[in-house]
Each structure stands twice: as C-alpha cells, then as structure tokens.
Image 1 (cartoon, rainbow, N blue to C red):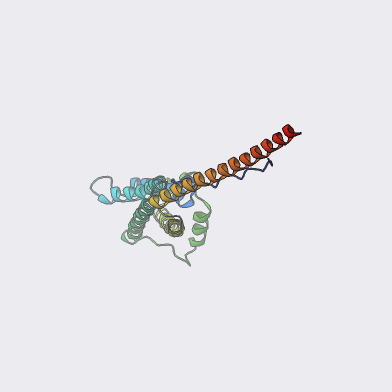
Image 2: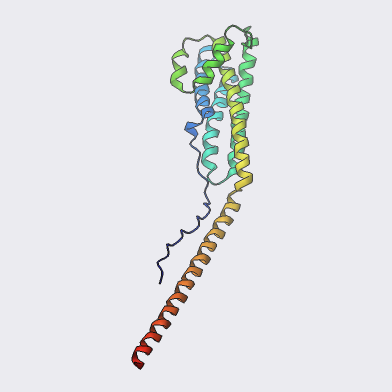
Length: 225
C-alpha cells in the first residue's frame, strides 16, 4: 500500500469570536485619560456640593470607558451586544463633550478653534499622546480653559475613532454572523470533518481488502506449484 501523506482536516468554525484587546485601542486609552481628567477637572473647578453636573460628568466619562471594556468582553459571544455597548460608550462621550462645551461660554472662557494660536499645538498633542502618563503631570497645572479644550478635543477624537471601529465591527457581523450562525457553522464543520474522516477510512479499508485478496491469490499460486 502506498504511503500517502494524510491531508489535514478542515478547520472547524469557532463558535466564540476572538476578544479584542481593548487596552491597545487608542480610543480606549483616550477614554482612560478623559475619565481621570474629568475627575480632576470637577474637583478643581466645580462645586463639590449641590451641583449635579459633577456626578453627571464623572459618570459619563466612566461610562464611556467601561462600556468599551464590557463591549469587548461580550463581543466574544455576541456581536450585537458589543455594538450596542460601543454605542452606549459613544453616547456617554458625546454627553461629556456637551458638558465641556457648555462650561466654556458659561464661565466666559474661549473655545479653541482653528485659527486660535494654541489650537494646532493642542491638536497635535492629543493626536500623538494616548497614555495617562502623558497628561497626568499637567492636571494640577492647566487652567479650566486649558483642561476643557483638551477634553473637548479628546472627546471628538474618541467619537471619530469609535465610529470607524463600529463600522469595522458591523462588517464583521455581516460577514461572520452572530452566535447562532457561528454555532451552526461549527456544527456543520464538525459533521463535514466526520464525513470526510469516514470516507477516508472506507477507502483505506477497501485498499486493505484488495491487498488482502492479492496476497491470498499469490499464496494459492505458490501452493499449486
């Protein structure tokens, strides 16, 4: 019998999706900064008692961060849940953005827009820095105008990056399906592998039978002689 190299079995579709490492996502890293920046901002510049804005801003900043984490974890089994939680994270970030945008005119401060002497430097800094260590050293030094403008810029960057990420996840959901589709694909893959294995074994058995018949015939011929 010829020694044919056995072909590897086809890979069975995995039911669980690969979990994204949210800690490496730039928009997640920026939400970590936003949460800590907002906590410091409200402590330094807003009344600690009698102002609901403090709790609302801190909670919105935390929600933006936490829902990215929960969405990535839930995305292992449910692409739909991941997309929903990412949308909650975006909504929370937009809510935080509005609070910072309201703060500036309410306190007669300047919103840094294109043309402002500090706008381009701020934009470059926020684009190229994602980690807490890049920002934290300024938290007790920046004025409320500086912190609010930095926060507004980070919120807008997070929103833009999350929109692109959601579109990517939506494409994955369309092409790969949800948990039910993946379970069906996994079952079909398993059955197909079983069928292919049985067919290969049947061929091997048939070849062995043929070889056995040939050997028997040779033995009979030797006995006749």
